[in-house]
Image 1: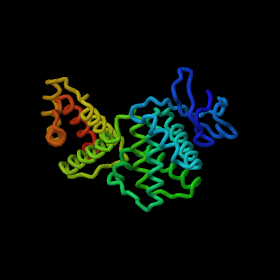
Image 2: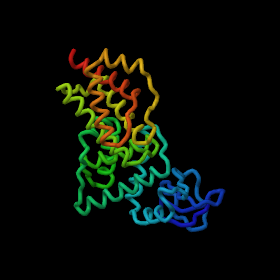
Image 3: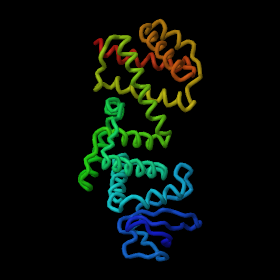
Image 4: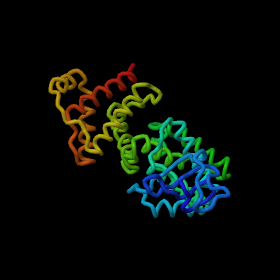
Length: 281
């Protein structure tokens, strides 16, 4: 790989064997290098192929050109840390979204334009592990740049992490699912007049089930198969949980203009029964 353009000591524009333009990242990659010189492959840490529709070439170039070298180095450190914690390798579009977000988060901090996160309470509950990783990422930024971003920012980073793990389902979908999960849990809590034990396994199960239920609904992958026998069993055996599930069905269908299948009601009823039975005991 030869250097086509140097953004800073750690980021250069190059070409791969197929003559595709690529952005190459690595600590000290371009130190004492010039355009046309070969890159040291042992220093290469990440390669981005500039053909991603969500982050076209001019956006990559603009982004890397505008970020100070020290900040970009810290962003790399943050991203590699998150990947290591999750044991995941992010897609190129995820890197772009992360770096773009962190860059403007730092810009907003300097301009004292901090944004509150209206879903921070739910983020802490629903994505506890991801949220802790995000808070550790903020500590890296604080240690390396002396900038202490607020906890609300950890919430936004958590959304990026969840979105990356879900293979880029879309930030808007991730945020909408979080809002809807909150609403459904509120329906169950008010219907039964209970407070959830958020440390319980059944609570975590129902949160997970509702999350993936909405993921299916919002991506048009909701279950449509029907099991009349199980549906009738739920009606008779778990009447109150079934009535609660129907209330959720009405809410979801009105809110998202969609149809909730009988099979989804069956599974939802089972989870409601488990978590409320545990509380009653």
